[in-house]
Length: 473
Image 1 (cartoon, rainbow, N blue to C red):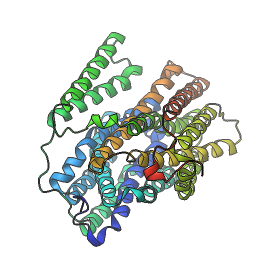
Image 2 (image 1 turned 30 degrees about the horizontal axis):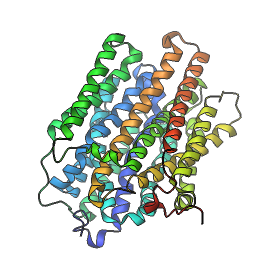
Image 3 (image 1 turned 90 degrees about the vertical axis):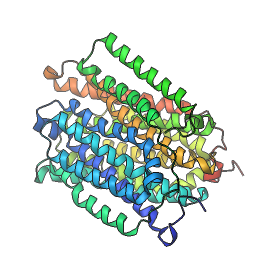
C-alpha cells in the first residue's frame, strides 16, 4: 500500500472534497481581491498598477513555500500541516483586512501565501497518492470544481462586498470559511505520514527561494525605477547565479526540495515549459481586464464582475467534456488548438473599447474560461503520464511551484508592459491608460503563442496513460 494512502481507509471518498475545499479558499481569495484592486488603490492613495505587489507577492510566496510542503506532510502529518496552513491563511487574511498601507498589505499577503502554499499542495499530494493514475482525469476534474466555483462567486461577491461594506471585508470573509475548514480537516482527515521523513534541504530552500524572490523583486520594481538599468542587470545576474548554484547543489544530494533532474522526462519538461507560458497569460489577464473595465472604461465593480462571470461558468460547463476531448484528440492536438484559440481571444481583448457591444467581451470571457479549464486539467494529468509512481510526489511539487511562479510573473509582466506603455501615470490621459492596458494584453497573447510552439514538440500519443488516446481508429 502507498505510504500516503496508508491510514485513509473509509475516508478516501472525502479526500477529493477536502482538496476541492482548499482550492476553493485559495481561488476565492484571488478573484475577490482582483475585482477590488481599483477600489483598494483609491482607498490607499496609490495608482492601481502599483497594487501589483499585493497580487504577485501572494503567488510568489506560494511558489517559495510549495517545495517544502511535501516534506512537511511527511514529517508532521497531512492533517497537522493542513490545520496549521488553514490557520495561518485565515489569520493572515484577518491581518490583511486591518492593513493601513500597500507595503503592510503586501507583507500580510506574503504570510497568507505561505499558508496557501502548505494548504493546497498537501491536499493535492494526498489525492495523487490515493487514487490510481487511470482515474486522475476524472478525479482532478472533480477537485478542480473548487478552483472554478471560487472564481465564479468571487467577482460578484467582491463587487457586492465593496458596494455594501468597506473593502476590508474582502479579506475578512475568509475568517468563517477558514473556521469551517479547520473543523472539517480535524474531524474527517486521517493523519497520514511516513515513519522517517528525509532531512529538509535547507540550503536548497535558501538558494532557490532567494533566487526567485530577488528576480521577482527586480522585475516588479523596474517600472518604479528602484535601481539603474545596470543595477537591475546585476541583480538579475545574481538571481541567475543563485539558481545555477541550486541546480548544482540539487544534483549532489539525495533529497533536494525540487528534483530538477525529473525534467529530463520529455513529456514533463514540455508540460512545465508550456504551463509556465500559458499561466503567465492566464495569470496576468484578470488583473488587466479589471483595470481596463474599471479604470479605463469607468465601469462599476458590479458591472466588471458581471462581465467576467461567463469565464468561470464556461469553465464549469466544459469540465464534463474534458476527458472525452483528451481521449478523442490527445494532448498534443488539444493543446495546440486551445492555445491558438486562447491567443486569438487575448488579442481580441486588446481591441475592446468602451463603445464595443457588451456581448463581445462576454463571449471572449466565456472562451477564456473554456481554454483555461481545459488547459489546467490537461496539463495537470499530462505531467504524471510518464512519471514513475515513486516520483509523483515530487512532480506534484514541481508543477504546483511552477504554476504559482508563472502567475506571479504574469501579473508583474502585465503590469510592467502596461506601465511602460502608459509612461507618466500621474498625468496620463484616459486614452493613454486604455492604450497601455491594451499593450499589456498583447504581450500576454504573445506568451500564449510561445506555449503553442512548445506543445508542437509533443508526440501525438503523449499522455496515453492518462487520456486513453490511441490516435485514429
